[in-house]
Length: 95
Image (cartoon, rainbow, N blue to C red; front, top):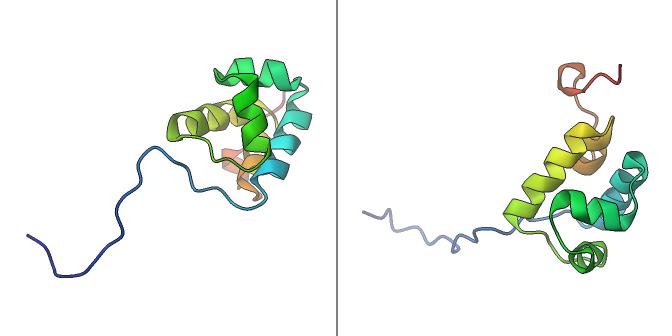
């Protein structure tokens, strides 16, 4: 049953990224201390795909989940990736 309201089609598997996502990705890389190649390997993607993200291509939903998982293992990484300051209870301790 529909309510008669037109809705745009759902796009599955594509993360809608902010315009500054390439800068956030670079900042996460810097915080992690990984090379681009090691970062790609830790995310389970080809280094060429990581390069495409750096040039503005959006990661898939699965790849975005891998990015979030990596960011949670890097002190300050999740806040950097999300572009916001997280409440203290969501930060990982570095000790």
